[in-house]
Image 1: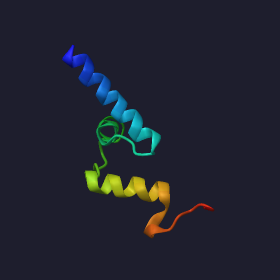
Image 2: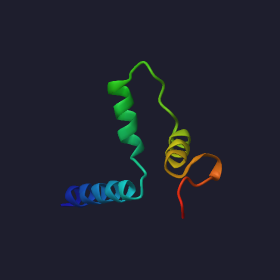
Image 3: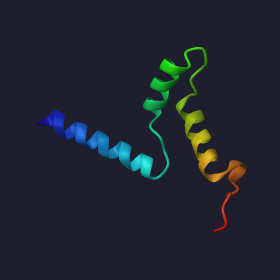
Image 4: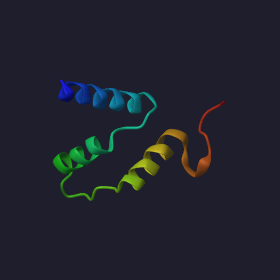
Length: 66
């Protein structure tokens, strides 16, 4: 029962991150290890910064009309 609840909470948390455009770091790490083993994996801070820049634009500028 506790396992089922924790699994549901984990899935809900991941869904909420994806809704606001923040992919799961552990998913990124797993992807890099399997698909790109020759490349280095970004730290969590680098990953977070890169995802924010990709979504909102670099250097604090917004790339949208409003």
